[in-house]
Length: 265
Image 1: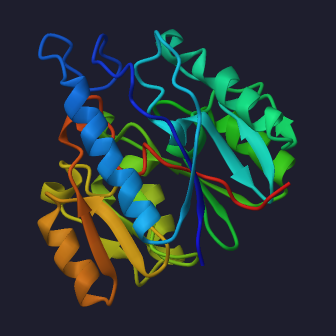
Image 2: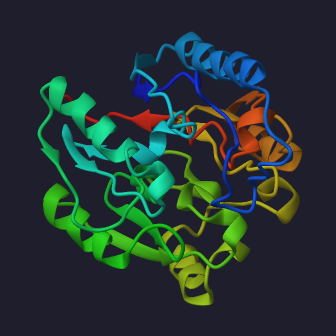
């Protein structure tokens, strides 16, 4: 089934500050290359038959390209983001304003959360990350607003500062993840919930191979994640590799650039 994604062209992309271990301002980034790579990602989605809507990028917000962090959308309801770092603070209202202008019912959050960066929607539950960017109280707030059960997972490795850097959904009932990114208790929860999950190794996790997007049949994934690509192919998924090396300099990959709009208002 075709999906609906919201994306933001990286017109103002740069690495100007360091708020995660991937970011090295002294090394900089090539904005023009980032745009070309982002366009390749957008084309991959459209070639698969998915709909891509665009939000206007705002000057002074170099990370606004990472649309996944802007909200969580389920059943046509929009739970907004409240960013942990002031450098990204204005992004939350900008994304919420876009949805409100489209007519979606929106909820301005009281608690710190970074949208789909730390929330992953499945058929029956929402997986939610905490430990670096999203407060545990935001998990409860999202559950009350969306009416969906939320399962909290604790991230322990600062390289995997968002849930979507360490885990992605294969379909509505199964996931792929890197176990070592999670606390021992959270690893046990994941094993119980997803006994048939795809387990990634450190090599694939370290190129943000788990920051991937699956529609249940096709997986759009960073090209460098060779082992994960082979395993997904072995399990019958069509693997679509993309190059996002410039955006990875800010800690982002395909999923970071992609906010899924689930359900129309």
